[in-house]
Image 1: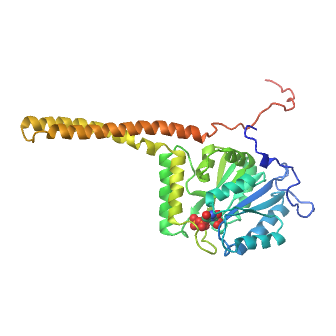
Image 2: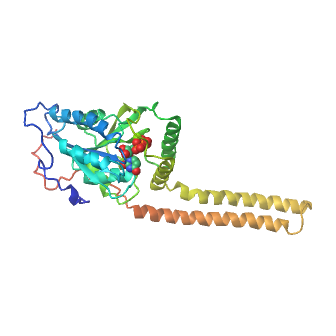
Length: 355
Ligand code: UDP
Ligand code: MG
């Protein structure tokens, strides 16, 4: 493809543990069963990790037994945890061979941890899931089935019920999604977080993006690949504390807006234009006052000069902003298209009857 990724050079059939050997009855018998990667970022999740393993393992094993997927891997991204998370992960690996631990050298943050997992995941489909069981892992099976029966590249988990989140969290999340939709032209599904399933093509496309502070919940919809949604009920964190303090939420918002919108850069342009009109009005008013004789000597010219110079400065800033914005967009270097299919090298189609 146009974005070669040596990490993804897959050797089919050799990379995952195949369980059993028993004959299974695949539900989608026409298609070969896919390999599934489950990427889970975790930062100091010692409290929740045993609960996660107990709940996820039977589900994942059952998907293999039922032929929903041929094999799976759990990509546990240890985002520089300072508690017992790495120890627990190593211990888990001994009894659960599908667990693969990707340890980051330092805490990189939720989005970066997911990006690291996506870059290494080998599955035909990749699910990203939080470690704290707020997103019920039962939905994975449904996501995978929908992706395959409907032939879509992305299945978003959409929170239909957030009553378990705090009022502040709900309010801030709603404001965040609404503002983002208003400021950028990307059509993001409302209330979709980072619980989603992506096809290999989608993961490759995301990995090929050169930007560093990518906010995946907007980057993925921006690709515009065929998608579907699954509703789920957002649960309470199963154990431990939120790793998302307000400062991190604000950083996520700034990354989201600056990553997808040049609107803030245009503020100065608009203020400059409005300031220019105001300066004209002030000129008329000041001249009127002067003719009416209500003014001190020098007042008219001072007022007019101050307002006009302010407007000109803002306008100049706005123009600079336009150019900076174009440079920024060029630097982001987002591909403008992704090829879905190329018939080159395919065997020729048998001749078709024409009407
Ligand atoms: N997380 C991470 N690195 C961080 C912060 C969080 O990998 O620096 C992980 C965390 O372990 C969890 C997920 O990101 O699996 C979501 O974090 P959390 O549940 O604390 O966020 P909240 O649900 O409160 O927004
Ligand atoms: Mg959480």
